[in-house]
Image 1 (cartoon, rainbow, N blue to C red):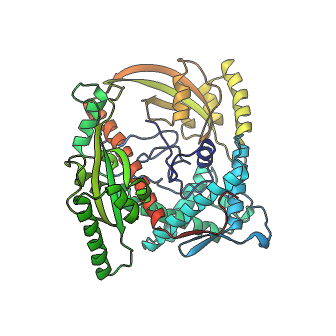
Image 2 (tube, one colour):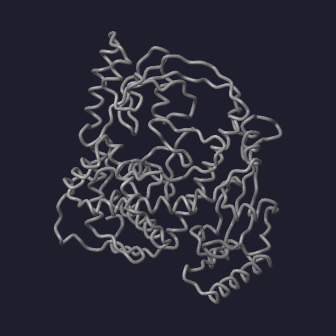
Image 3 (cartoon, helix red, strand yellow):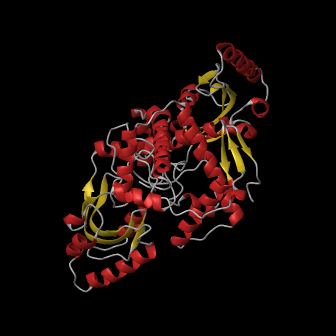
Length: 490
């Protein structure tokens, strides 16, 4: 299954997509740095299938902070406030240092660097979102113990093939104190815990949704495609510290708006004038979504509603009171891919050189090209994997065994699929480093009905997690007080 990054920003242009894929975009980027779908935990280049479990998380199980790079020394004169986020500030020094880090990362990867004003504007938005999520985790009272931070440090060290002591040396050499590094990791773990609690723990996949998904994929005439709902909402937000009297007053306001909507008032105009939701300027419309991609409270309220009707009661959520209308309902276009009961599996092995500060991508590719020449002239692949590969499969001669479609990260799988048995790929770059891939064999195998349901459950869950995460982040950003002290494009 294909991994895709999703962002709090809508309609990203190409350089913004490039920026969000940089590994230095860490805390607020839910999946871009890992190149994996929400709902799947990446282990090596594999994306394990979930089976029937519904307990996977949208967030990575461990922080992906990595190792800070040496910072450019800056004059105190530039250390001014560029943005206020609730009760904290973002300084110009933070902004410029982060922009420099991302520029260096893109330059090292031989990727185009955006214009500086565009880069600064996007980096500032990322810093704002980092701060918003961190503050939300702290406000929620989420505590992270020193032992959890120690485990996170061990994880980062293992990912970078070094000991915790070596990691500390590298961090301090970068100019960051060890205490500061631990504090940053603690914040990231806090945010992960918050996402687990507020997003993935609330997403469930029902048997009926799996049935609909499989029917839509099967090409059966009766299932021309899943139904999609366009819901409009008016949100009357309730502050976290609101008293019972204030809540009652705000509920009465929402009920008054509900009566106006039921009486024939233009719902879109009511939303524009009264809603505190991010889509208020679009008349409160969320756009067409499958029922599984709607917030659960909304889905339950509109699933049996006729298009054009208003939900007869105010819906209460953690954010406040919602007045809902089902603006329209349609049947999506039928899926083009039939649900196959046979799949092609590939027996594959690989050699991996991990990239990082001490091994630039260009040097890793050069070494791999030299090694490939030796392999194509008779050197033993398994022996080379045991000697040179930095993957956990090295002791098995690089063997990954028989893999099914969707089990590997996309770059690896796409390169593998282009090879004939016996062929060795050119150097292939993934987020883990540079690979040489050899396909040993292929076979057709039957997929049981149970396995098909497992795949379907995972796909439906990922769709719902993406929608739930997007909604959650938009709500956090909408509820935050953000004041910019500079032009975001300068």
